[in-house]
Length: 479
Image (cartoon, rainbow, N blue to C red; front, side, top):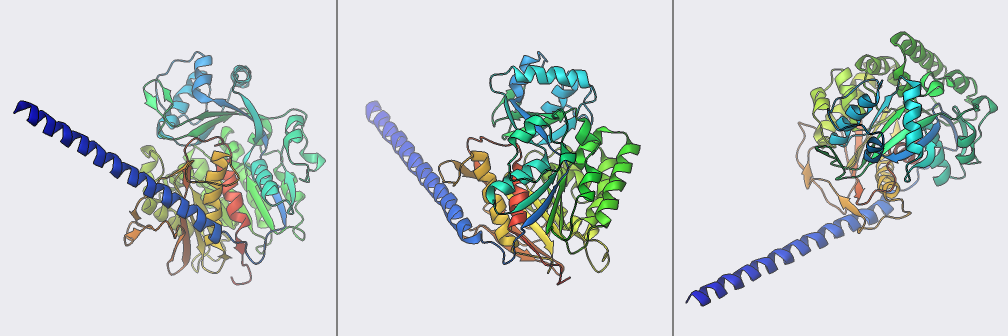
């Protein structure tokens, strides 16, 4: 009797395992099919606008990126794992460890400036000795120029930024780089990458990302700012791309305010018919970000930013969900991101209450999805643009020409709300671009297929924004 009972239990156990494995396999097959559906649907969605940008003016930050495994570098520096604390400015190796640990645990991209040149140079020297160290083109503006040249070789680009000898060798030969942009010694930025599941002390990274630090004299003082505006030929340019304001954060408040005013003075002289895109990057000083919000973004046509920059902007501007900045881990809920994007457009964008603003477009990008919001009638082809940006995120992270379902993972909810007070929307993998509108604004959203084994995380946001822009069409005449 006991034998039969044990046999029965064994058969049941085997049956349960069989059913579970069959169920799990079916789910994996269905999930892989969803990812394939999205890839195929993107191919149909990504179409060029009727009028494309052909002559670009891009600046103002550029450098050489020295890319290293973050945890390996900290171990080589013999710095112990300890506190996790967000520091606005880095003064010591311990500051580097604590701030790296803070964002490592959250899985968020971040960038901080070093105040001590000698300490930074010592860290760079250690980095160069690591077997896995690599040199790449660095700086948001230089990366945007490079990715556009690679994807759209027929486009003419004038690039303004501090270009040293090594960077000049790496930049595409097709870029027009005036001699005023040349500097004698390259600026080096240290990129500390990490993979999902990496450990540092008691911390484990939830996603693959990077932490950036630098001691940068040219970019941190925006030395190419005047050259950028003086060399802009508005008659021969149809798109202006600008980034690098975040590196000013390492300077005094008085200096920062003066340079921001110089940015505003230059932007005011650009005709409203010529679209200007500003790409933000990680900052930690609330007062400085508030200066950019209140003085700069209403003078640009388009804005690009990620989850750290969006939530910090909301914190600086007293927007929705602003306390999430302190405890957010990973991408924000779609409804919260939607709330913050529409808040930016309502408070700083062009409207009947604020007709002087030229801000009409925002491209928000994070690990698992993108949102493009624009003022009605100001831009077209946004659905194609958000699909192109989302597709580029997976392609660059995996470092492939075409995605396939075996190398990516869909991390998008089955249902979601576009805003906190919105209806629940179901996601259909055959229709991966979702569009909706309010009285004043239009929105498009698409998931990202997250790379299972990321090869390139540096410059991902710049590639995404640049790609989305090149598939967008600016309609000034309708405003």
